Image (cartoon, rainbow, N blue to C red; front, side):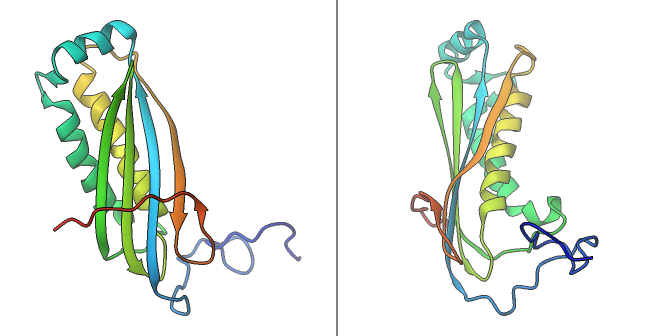
Length: 169
């Protein structure tokens, strides 16, 4: 039986058995990815968080979420079964508050044979989940939404606009 349509790279030739992609023949390039997630709060909770400078009984919401996002980036290959462990060269998690939403942007960079899209998406997601966890004493009526890749560079093709990452030491 021959397969029709797009080829999924994480499946063997039969299209049935999952596998980690062999990247040995890929070019080593500078690779960057930029992902975003949003956490929407009920308006009254957003006001209370603004008034409290985003401090809750659990601590500084934004700071803790930024650290959690970086930790999520670093743990991606342990969480996503077919991801390669990567030697990361930079990661930045920025969180802006816009009205009743926290907007999380995660940028990741490495020099290697495979991209960092999953790392950026995981970082943004973990930061969003951390915000939820730190604010759930106020409400469970929060919505994590629009987790998406905004851009990537390096490898076969670029997508969107991956903004530069500041290297971390």
